[in-house]
Amino acid sequence: MEVYRLCRKIYSGSLSGKGAALEGARWNSPGIEMIYTAMNRSLAMLEVAVHLNLSAMPDDYYILTIHIPDELSLKKLNLSSLPDHWNDFPYHRETQAIGDAFIKSGRYCLLQVPSAVTRGDFNLLINPVHPEFRRIRIVEREHFPFDKRFI
Image 1 (tube, rainbow, N blue to C red):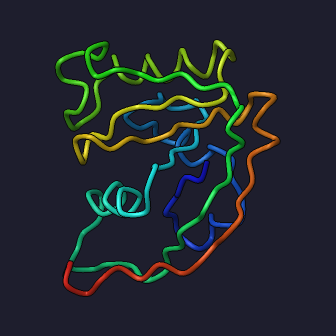
Image 2: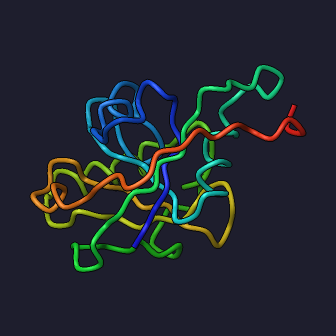
């Protein structure tokens, strides 16, 4: 399968999860490394755009196409298993605890979660310390200018 990640040029050469560990995010606490990806390009863009000041849209973003072998271990979270406020901002400790447990258990390399931005779409979270992670590869890296109509 292929998934997508939108990031600044300086971070587009590798996958580590260190950026997410700096401050934490919806599915991880500070200090927990996790790689956030989207199941399609437009979701990758929206997941980043909701955090940007659209009047000062940066022009140094790159879209990564990431190949994940189909046989890698995957856990899927159902909407019904999440707390009522799972998609609120700021993030709730309960969703961070779910992601932290995914990483710490080491049972799965991948965790599929619903997107908080677009209902019906999914993000794929990657555990960078799982043994299967070494099989995941960036297969394409290209400049991704945001459409000027966002401004």
